[in-house]
Length: 230
Image (cartoon, rainbow, N blue to C red):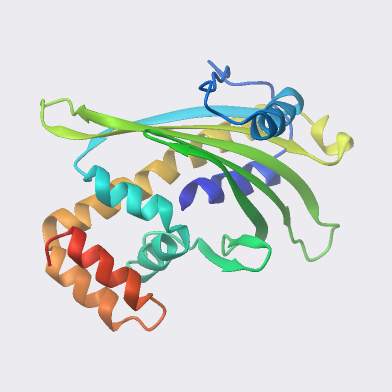
């Protein structure tokens, strides 16, 4: 969902050295071809960042369902006005439009318990300048945890490595790029947190709102209802 939007943002903001703790350790189960693709982007990345959020009470099965259905996840967040990201499936894969001029194609590279790795290639469309093109690797980790008050919740972290196709743009290093990437990483995680708040406080109202929205997939909404016991 939002992780892809973050990748798009990083493609837009060139430059900057790596953020704190940029290293990425992949599990041995990642296939060689996918591992090589991931490592190639990381080796040439001009922006890297990592963000995490205090655990929030989103059920793991619901979270996994949204990750497995990113097009439906963005239908939900758009219907609830939590984000503008839109993802849809086409013959050549998953497409992204962040609503602000960034478009791209997403390729899931790896998915296992508590870890998702995505590859994104996209461009930023500008009215008076050439499009900015680039690619990114997005790593989402998640696990059951507890918040500051000891309540059960879902702990999430997001790590992103981005590179631009233009070496000229990549050379324009600046603190603003890194700050922007870090800010967007945290915003992406907050989309899930805010969705959790809506589900926790007004579940039936949320489901009714989704049912009224013609852009929300009916089969997947029915699946979500079953998961939520409604």
